[in-house]
Amino acid sequence: MTRKKSDSCLSILIKMTILMSILLAVLVGGVYFAYNKLNEFFNRGGTVIVPDFRGKHIVEVMKSKPAGLEVVRRDEKFDDQHVKDHVIAQFPEPGAVVKPGKQVLLSISLGLQKVNVPDLVGNSMREVDVALMNAQLAGGDRAYIFSDKIAPDRIVGQSPLPSEEYGVNKDVDLLISLGRRPEYLTLPNLSGVALDDAKNRLKAWGLNFGRIYSKPDSNRQKFQIISTSPAPYSQLRRGEVVSLLVSSGSDDGTATIADLKKFEIYSGIENVKPAEARFAPPAVITSQVSAAASAQPAVGQAPPRVIVAGEENVVAGQPVDRTPVKISAPVVDREMSFVMPDGFMPKEVKFIHITAEGRQQVYAGAHKPLELVKVKVPVVPNSKVQIYINDVPVEERRVEP
Image (cartoon, rainbow, N blue to C red; front, side, top):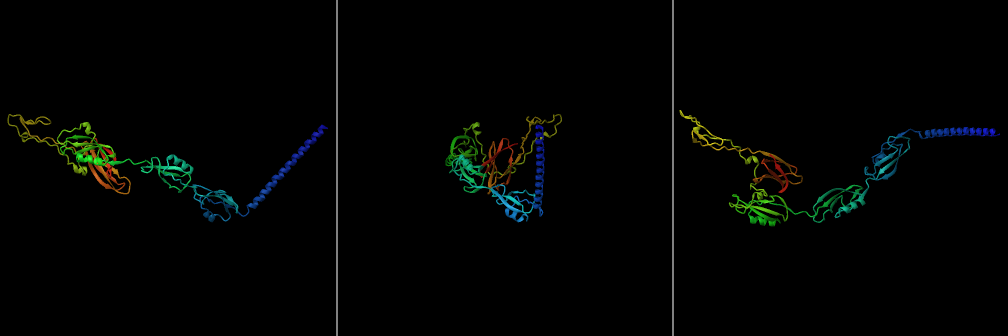
């Protein structure tokens, strides 16, 4: 009984398995048949290749789209890479093959998202950072300027201006105050001015005079200014001390060698022409010997002897008139080039040559912005050249041999 019952269950299981297989086969066949029918339905009437609409204006898209396609705005969003009303993306992708009537979904740009720039003038840097963060902006380039109205480290100006619409996360350039400008002035050249007059001028300029030194100078009257320390044309703050070196005439001076090193002795030469006009051609080494040196000796006498180069010149025991040897080394010039600063108006440039003998102006002239100026300067050991623009020192160079 048990065996028959077991055989009956097995046969039922086999039959059910066969039945399920048949049903699955019928289902697969039906799906395949339906797919073919649907494919035939949707594929009737040819195909269309989807164009590339990305980066184009929506109006241009509508004009250029194929007749069998339908263009639909899928969404709109801010985008800093695409101008407003231009296509950011599309679906299906460009080049896809579709049937007529297929919809092409487009993402359209709303352009760059903009915010109003906050007013930052007068704010501290900490306040600026918070205001820019809240406005979804960032700090850009920074420049600094002296200001009589705005305290140091506070904003004087900004770009873009306050309340202007500006792109999100864009940089805002800042102009920051350095506070009040220090009061500087250019020390004029006081060479040749009387001592009392120089004191009055310094007082009028807001400067104080310090120690007064003197040295003999036969070219200047007594108590005339020879030089100043700091040197002429130096940039000084109001209230700084200026020491004076004056002429003691033919009297002994009070200045020691160490004191004189504080001054750049001014030579008094103004508007000096270029170097080639200031120096004569080198002299030739000459030496003269009296005619007796060339005379023939008498019979029985020794020939005349000529002694030179430091010895006493004697011909036949007699002194000979000998002109001293004169050597004048040629002066070597070096050409210096200088490019005028940028700007709108011509400016005056001066070249001041400073040596142990003093200061000499070797060139002065007006030139246009960015013009190349070439000046020849004598090569003197341990000398330098100061370059001035409108009497303001801008550069100093050593004159190397």
